[in-house]
Image 1: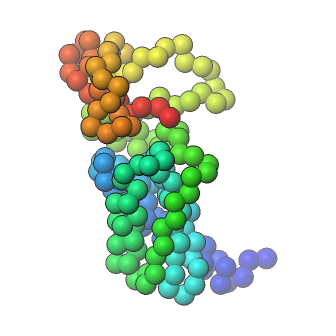
Image 2: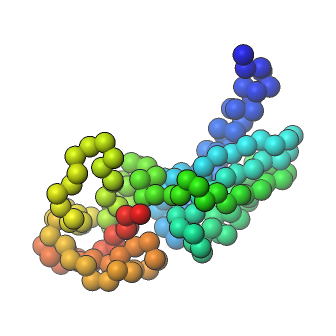
Image 3: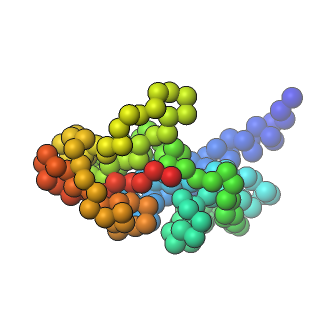
Length: 169
């Protein structure tokens, strides 16, 4: 049986997780940390103490420090006195952790979202990347790296527009 205090902590953790997740990604501000799927958990550890579990998109991600500082700032602004952000490496982050809303935002921003892995469904027979501008799958790789290590630079053969592709991990 769940006590009233436990239920209140669960509600508070959910609200604090929502706040931490609302922080914009420092490299792709069109996405929130919730959209990106990097906020793993929030734990109330005392009256004014909170621990946030954060998983980087890859080990050594330079944005992890900015993410942590932004989470701390947002939670401090909402009355949490002591915030500790803990980096959690297992389970490793995957592009499958990006939410459907995050994928939609990437496309609207002109970045081709990563293709989902087919864990339970049919395996894709194509390796093509859909152009976020015109929808064509006739695209070509220009560079394996773009403005960040997690993106590649591509060009659409149909509309000739260059675009970033968030690489699958």
